[in-house]
Amino acid sequence: MRLGVLDIGSNTGHLLVVDARGGAAPLPAASYKEPLRLAEHIEDGHVTRVGIEALTEFTRHAMRFAVERGCVETMAFATSAVREADNTDEVLDAVQAETGTRIHVLSGEDEARLTFLAVRRWFGWSAGRLAVFDIGGGSLEIAGGPDESPDVAWSVPLGAARLARRWSTWDLTADRVEDLRLQLRAELARDAGDLLRGGRPDRAAATSKTFRTLARICGAAPSSEGSLVPRVLRRDDLRAWVPRLVAMPPEELPSLPGVSTGRSHQVVPGALVAEAVMDVFDVEELEICPWALREGVILERFDQISVLD
Image 1: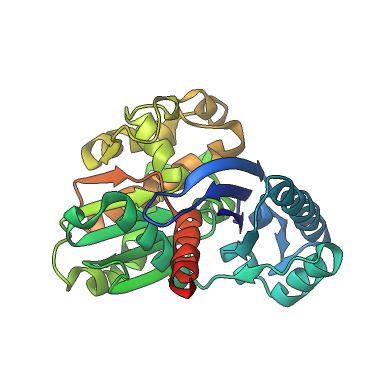
Image 2: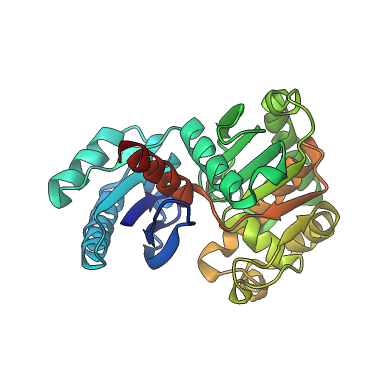
């Protein structure tokens, strides 16, 4: 069965088309994405008309792409940028009126839960008690537990794009960086006990472009070597890189391995959040999982279809 999942994130709109069948991993068949940057089209809490038009046009092209690739069903969802906007219903109604597609908004908890499902399926039961972290554009998702459904799952407004808008990385002094580091740790520590009281995880994993980029900067294999190559982000390596990243002129950041020009301004905020995560949860290394939210949505939907069959 060919399924599509349309993911409207704070940075990117991404349609993933996969072939799915019982007992097998979803096989990617096609992909279509564009840098929507919805988080940058929010003014006074509202997604702007320009942002709505960009989302509408992308959705129209993406759904046509899915039909042309033979998808029998395409699930469309949005995360923090649309979820937190003051005009969420206006955005969703406008897109549906123009494209016929209703985009569903995932809660932060569901976003964390579905990402956890994908990571659990990737690593399997041998991972034991699993902790999962995902830095998106607008939020950080955290989940943990020994089963396929996490014991705890929550979202924190510490996405890389959100923080890049909030901070000016052009003039980050040493004192300012230290202040930000302490703020991040305080915000994360507020609910850290929810994950830690279940016991120390046997395995800690990370998903998302931000974590993959940081792992690549710290020496992990490039994406060209395939998804089955193990990739790890080590705390000591990241800690050594953070001051170097902060000190680099912004125009030099895209020269680093794995850093794209469009997201280079998010590298420093993302690195500070990742470092805070590893410190607050006392994680020496994070294994990078190639599956994330989109795969979680597909896996859950195929599980539902299989039960009905």
